Length: 138
Image 1 (cartoon, rainbow, N blue to C red):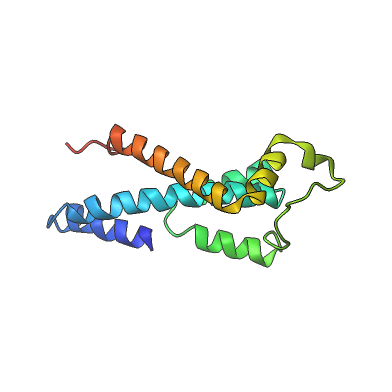
Image 2: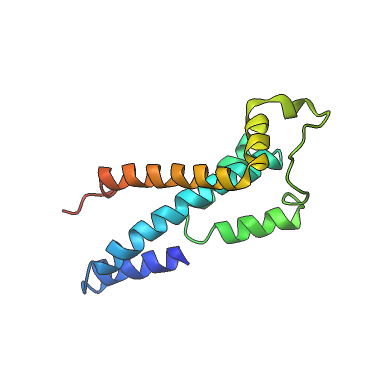
């Protein structure tokens, strides 16, 4: 959805030369949703014990317009989203690694964790907004 808004905004400015408002509105919305998707992809990846390559692929798909749709569907098809949240430590040695320990802490305090993750996304978003657009308008 946010890709559609951003692409419409880009078309309004660069193809039709009508207005920049589309990018000014859609750009920040898309950027915020992108950061939220990245945070969720990492959290789900740790929970599902994805390898770093799969997590990197999830993040890379968020950069390509609409690529998250087939990627997420492929995850579902291959059962890579199956199972519940890992709130308790198992006998698996990977459960003693720092990302899994942090995940269990987050899952034991879901409301506080959601607030912390959202705050992190807001802080990163604010820093990126302060830095300005990725391509300066010339």
